[in-house]
Length: 97
Image 1 (spheres, rainbow, N blue to C red):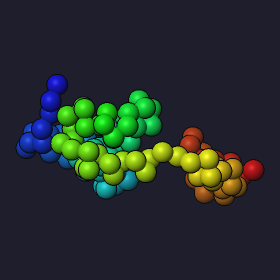
Image 2: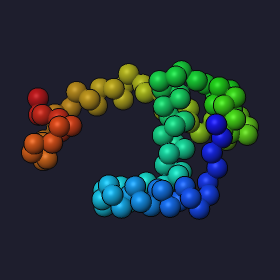
Image 3: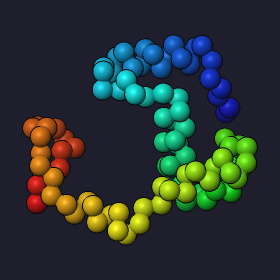
Image 4: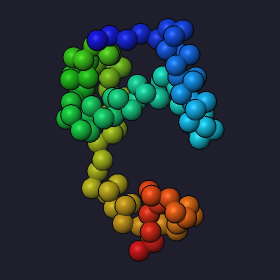
């Protein structure tokens, strides 16, 4: 199913953002594009050629910008750092080590 940006989609996005509240004011269709590409790289294992193969990107150069989503072992070590919890009662808040 191909979906293109149109007035109806912008209306739906506006309604969803209003319902969700001010914390999602930054969300745009471009945000969805980056998220989708990142997930396709990280979870589906697609390389740049695979992203182009989905039809969402026209050429290798435009899909190449998503190569940075490969997480290195060094970057994963950041998860080991202690984090001060500032959001009490929040499910996703990490507890300090």
